[in-house]
Amino acid sequence: MCGIVGHIGTGDSADILLEGLKRLEYRGYDSSGIALLNGDSIFVEKAVGKLKNLTDKMAQHTVSGTSGIGHTRWATHGGVTHLNAHPHTSSDNVVVVHNGIIENYRELRETLSAQGYHFVSDTDSEVIGHLVVEKLKTYDKPAALLRAVLEELDGAYALAIITKDFPDCLLVARNASPLAIGVGEDACFVASDAMAMSEQTRRVIYLKDNDYAIIRQEGAEIYDGDHNLVNREEVIVAASPGLVSKGGYRHFMEKEIHEQPDAITHTLAAMTDDAGALTAGLTDEQLQQIKGIVFLAAGTSNYAGQVARYWIERLAGVPVNVEVASEYRYRAPVSSHLTHAIAISQSGESLDTLMAMRYAQEQGLSTIGLVNVDHSTIAREADAILPTRAGPEIGVASTKAFIAQLTALLALAIAIGRANGALSPDEASALHEEMKSLPSMVGKTFSLFDELRPVAHDLARVSSCLFLGRDSLFPIALEGALKLKELSYVHAEGFAAGEMKHGPIALIEDGLPVISLLGSDALAPKVISNLKEAQARGATIILFAAESVADDVDFATHTCRLPDCGEYLMPFITTLPMQILAYLTASEKGTDVDQPRNLAKSVTVE
Ligand code: F6R
Image 1 (spheres, protein in one colour):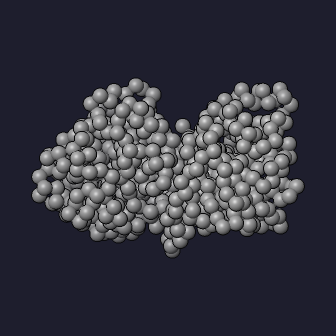
Image 2: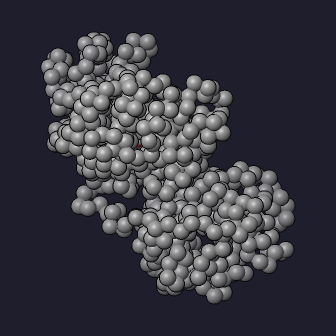
C-alpha cells in the first residue's frame, strides 16, 4: 500500500527521504511526495507517477531540511492526481503523510468544512492535517496534541506529521498499518518498512497497534493506546542495502525467479534439520496437537495454502480449510473441528490476513505465521512462526516467496505426518530426501526462458486464455492465471480441469489458448481426456507436462517437457514455467513487470 518515511536530525532530509522512498516504492507508485521543515519554512514537492518523477523535480531545487516526511501512494480515496498526492498541507503550518484508510473521514470532513477548513483533495487523509491545525488551538504539547487528533480518527493508519509549532519533532502513530522507528547516531527515522531505513540504521523499534510517538533527533517518546509512556524493544534488523539491487537482471522479477533454488535451500534449512525433523516453530508434541488447520491468506499466498491442503490431508490425515482472508471473519466460520490457524503471508503485513488471524485467535485457535519478513506484524502476533527465507522480494508479483511458502508447507506436512504417525519415519525421510533435490530441479527450468519466448509472443496477442490443472496442480493453474493477468493484463482464468464440462467449456472457441498442467500421476489419463474435450472444441493446447507423460498428449500445439519427479514436487516444477511465461508475455507487451498497474506489494488496507 502506501509507504511513509520520516527523518529528523543530522543529515540532509531530502536525500534520506528520497532514498527511503526508493526502497518503499514497491508499496505503491501512483504518486510520491516529500515535505521538509527548515526553521520557519516548510517546503513540499510532489509528483504523479513513479518516484523518478519526484526525484527529477527535486534535482531542480536546492532546498534542505533537518526534518521531513515522505510518501509513496497507492490510491484508495481519490484518483491518481497531483492534488491527491501526499503530503497534505494545512494552513501552511502542518504537513501529513498517511497510509491506511480513515473510515470516518466523511463526518470529519463535514465538521471541518463547517469550521472553515478548505479541502483541495479527494483523499480521506486530508482531514488529518486540518484536524491537527484545529487541535493546535487547544494543545501546546506535541503528545497531547497527537492524542487529541487520534481520538477523532477511526480506521487503519500509519501517519507522520510535521508542524512549525514543534519544529524539533515528528509526530507519528500507527493503528493496523505498519510503522517502525529507526534509531541512528544523531538522527531518528520512521518508515512503513524497516528496509526503507536500512541505509541509515539497523536499530529498529516496531510500534504496536494504537501506539503513538513523538520522535526527536535524540530518540523517541512512545505512548501506548492507553496513553502510558512505554518502552518498546529495540531490535537489530538484518536488512542489508545490498540485497535490493537488480544484480544485472533486467527486472527484479527476473532476478527473483532465478533466486528460487536459493529460496528453497534456505527455507528448507530454516525449517528442518538434515534428517528432516522440524526445527522451526513447533515441537513434536505441538505437531501432534494439530488436529485441523485453517489457512488464512490472500492471492498467491492463498494458492500456496490450497496446494498444502492436498499435501497435509494426504501425508498427515489432518483436515484442512483454506480461506480467502478477506472473507473469513465476516461469515461466522465454524472452527470447532480445527485447532490451528496458519496465516500465510510474504510481507506479514497484508491487513486482510492479519485481521483474519486475529479473528482466529479470538475463536481460540492457535495461530502460526508463515511469513517471509521476520519482524512483520503477523510474525509478532502469531503464537508460533514458520519462516520462509526467500529474502527481500521487490517485484510486486510474488515468485520466490511462493516457492519458499510451498517449501515450508511441504516440510510442515511431512513433519505433521511423521509426528502423528500417518507417515513412518522412513517414508518421512524419503520425502525429505526428495525435497533436497528441488533446488537443482528447479534450476533446470531456467532454460525455459528461451523455449517459451515464441509461446509468449503469441500469448501477448490474445485477449483471453485459460489455465487448467487437477489435484495439487489446480492451485498452480490458478497461480499461472493470476501471474499472467497481473503482469501482462491478458485476461486469464484458472480452472480444475475436471470442472470444465460443468460450464467453463462454453468459453472455448477457435484458437483460445488453454495452458495445461500435467503430472505423471494417477489422474493423468483423466486430465488428458479433459484436454482432449477442450481441443475438440477448437482450443489451442499449450502443454506443460512431466517428461514421461508428455507424449501421451499428441494434440498439443506446444509441449513443454518438465523433469519427472514425485507428485509432491510437481507443484514446484510447474510453477516456474508459469512465472516465466507471464514474465515473457509482459516483456513482449512492454508492461511494467516489476510494478504492474494498479497494484502494490503489501496491501495494508481492507
Ligand atoms: C500476486 C501477489 C499477491 C500477494 C497477496 C498477499 O503475485 O503477490 O497476490 O500474494 O497480496 O500478499 P502477502 O503474501 O504479502 O500477504
